[in-house]
Length: 492
Image (cartoon, rainbow, N blue to C red; front, side):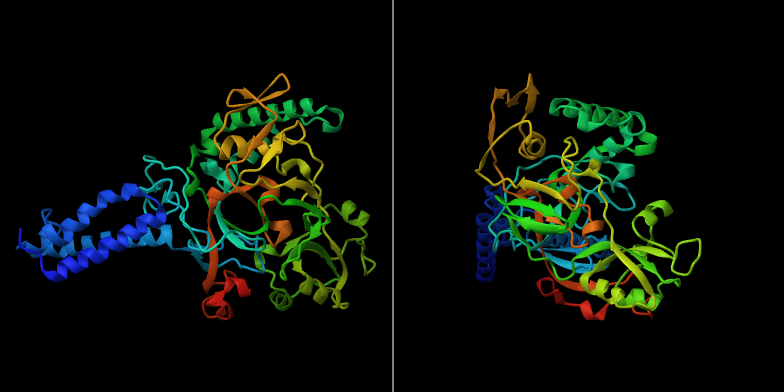
């Protein structure tokens, strides 16, 4: 062992101090086992870290130099992705026109504090599946509990937030776009006729939903060819979603005719809030130029799926004395786009907001509420340290946080509630929860469908749009949305 130079001691000291500060920040003393390795790499050099540099074989030196560079890059990307920034691409239209399909975002982990990973042994840049190999991108052991390092702040109302999909804990591989629980209820429709819930007591309604779910789950498990393998994913390996936070811990939230109320005060709507409208023309189809002006993508240019009788009953008629209805579109529109169409009397004959009331797939899936997506609640959002009285009326709303997110055993026997084997009529929450919704309200799978987002699922805050690509256009016809490049999300 050669005597270390003064420069080596200085470098070793700087790296060690920075590393110790990092450990203090993330509160992970297990990382102290790396300190001797840092000391050896700079001072003692007992481990031959760069043995390949002394090889007389040029091929070995070339290959190992590439391996060394790749390993360093992967380690660097792993730490940057885990604790500082992550790239995210908008996959769906749930936040249009605030964030667009094809936007690439820098997501700050520092805004709310980075999480110490549940699955530390994982491949960077792969959420849960390795491309090409089609296998898990992480090793399930070890799995660490939830811990978050201090950040710049907490999730606030109106923040756009990236988070792990709460209902993505269990996934049928061939139906990854549908959460497992909704899938089970949908599948059970094919074998069990639905009963009239209005004629049943609360206990009978709960029993009916339990039967639906059990039958659907059985069908999914017994048909792996159709549904694929059923996998269970740790929190940090669930799909990433991005929505707007409309309710924070302790809020009472309700939706009345599409307007969100928080603590009985109407929430200020985002400028680009959208609802679906049925738009009937005077005869011709809506031209491509107008669709582009309205910002309606090709994927959202749908024709009305209702029957003619339903459309006639809603007041839609032929304007040219024809027996057939003029074209009727089903379009998501902002307030500005709605006003533009309303003022185009030559093209547009009638516009009517699309009212859709289907309470069967709303959260909680196993509870009959008569709510719909535009008239929902009121619902209290759990807060860390707050205690709630549990009743037959609210147990279904809070059983998933109590059982699945906070790891308790919850049972109902003889009309009495048992948590971890003890009879109780109350529960004190261990985490904060949030209510997330998309700005494209009628085309967003959000908290109305799968419920609360626990604090341990929060990934970070989108800061910057660094690239934006329009999938409906070619590279030489406006594919790159230049006006969105390097725009701060808070300014959109």
